[in-house]
Length: 78
Length: 78
Image 1 (cartoon, rainbow over the protein chains, first blue to last red):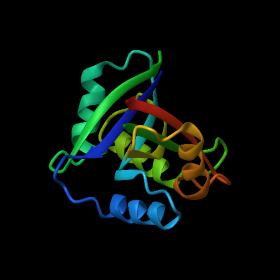
Image 2: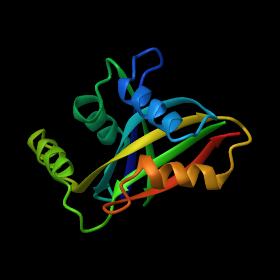
Image 3: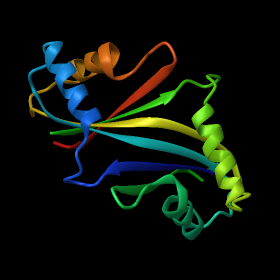
């Protein structure tokens, strides 16, 4: 079973990487960009019987730094 | 308009970060994990009149290294 975890910085947390990409896009001539936020996408191939709570635990304990990041769990295929 | 770009390594490209996370998950006792792949999620807030071709260009020129990475464009809100 494929599960996708989307980890992004919480609103208000400074995103220097996003700012650098934003600046680079403007440098390439793309003026219609208002904001850029960079996050992580983690694709887990897990056993079919892995329940939501276990995946949530993996996120809370390792995959996301919940002090400054929020995460979303998406089941891609079962 | 919010657009999300999901960038991931092409199949066959070595993913040391994914391997390290996989190893750490096993160390925490999560044995049901078969594989882990780490990618980037880029959230762009762009003008509503930005067309698909422009976003594709941004990906090809800057946001993804198309030699080893593939990308997917998702419109989150319009």
